[in-house]
Image (cartoon, rainbow, N blue to C red; front, top):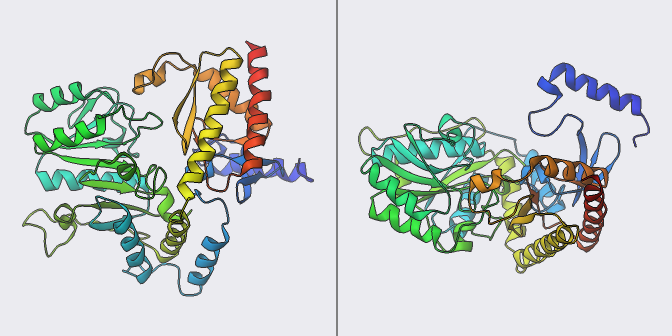
Length: 408
């Protein structure tokens, strides 16, 4: 606990006074994180946690990485932001294009939500069609289009994930109306079934649509080239975020040259030019942090170690849940996963909804008491997690799951 609990209480009271609900709208108000280093964070009480939240994904190389910090410090002396094209953003774009299979050109934004919203505008402008096909439960930011999910609403067509036949049927029903299939290649935590992404590529080509991968989460996380490199399926356009900013506000749209040309007033066809800019889009501090982060990720063996760590954690968690007699499964892949307290295969959003949310929330609370911090629905594994972190996490699972079983 903190040496000054009265100060801690005053901070929480101040938060309740100045913030709706006493939070930024992301995690519960009792969690106020004061600092981070490597794989660990500390709250305002001085409690230490192994961090599987990692800023909701951006801190994939850990907190306060010395190479990232050094790059940022050097840039601060040269200026923070200019609202102008700068060498740092150009260099980062070149790295993204070299790494990401679909990327011929890059256009920056400040958040993943913004990148997704502009990508939807882009594909609609390029095709001249109004509708977007997305998947139930897929998250593509806080725009109105991105949030439509539970039932088909014009101009968004909703399909079940991992069901190519249903997608094809919807495409035929809306022939000539759909601009693009807009999807997370790994939806939240649900991996694509073998052949599903390839089917989406073939169907979009057959029906003269674009394929867009929302890689705000998966970009530079499943592989250096993102999910499209990991699964071997190349979309026309993708969105990127989180990892590419190294902990600073930065996201991007990347795609085929002829599609991205709509952002270029000199190349876009008459009436199709799409203005897109933002005050902090491509800011140099975020760009150098992103360059440093991607350089670290591109070192030989980095993703092998990340997957080795994540697979060890997933195996241990699944084994403990089984030994404790829970009907539960660990869903996802090594760099990001979670527990779903339900039986049967988890192939789509409605399968996820079968999970016992109360049990999951209780387990998360028990883990936090034992020094493991995660989001409400995901473990993000960073490259900073080492063997001692893994052992401490497994010990926390053993204790927390035993208590959860005793409470049943």
